[in-house]
Length: 233
Image (cartoon, rainbow, N blue to C red):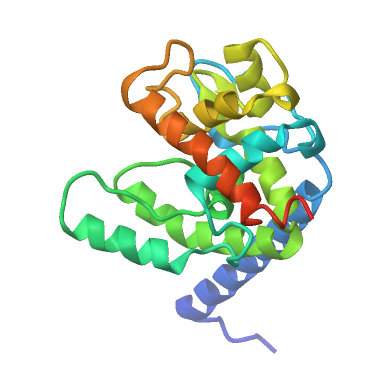
């Protein structure tokens, strides 16, 4: 008996469901693997025309000053949110409605998900990225936990032209390992993270110097108020 031919919509639904299932299984497996092994590379590194100097470093070999500096600069609620700072997102949306340069409300978790699994993007591609970014943020918060998220973030974040991670950044700017960064050195390194190709730590001046000094002062607050409690218990 000849089986009736499936309609186009039925074939399309089956195809979509199958590949969606493959994606979910594959992404969970990859996320679980990265919970244990170092992230070998990212799309940003692969497509960086300046190359990608990096040196994977365990969090225990990165100065607490830098951990506290990025919490102070990037995500003060890092230890308390579930990957998304809804108040910061709402504030960003309100600012963007008024025009000017688009600003995000991304947490360290979101930035890590983007850096590891997705692309940077600008314009409409930035908005296209948001849906998978939410998905991967949920995965790493669920599978990795805060300490691993911080460790990966500090190893894949761009810290200069063709330079990635805390260790490579510390060696580039200070000729020392990330474990030995002082409070002001860590603060200035954190200050350039939003625009690592345009801001420099060496010979720092103007806005970057002022911002770095502000972060340095807030490092003490992070420690005092236990905003790093999910990292240093």
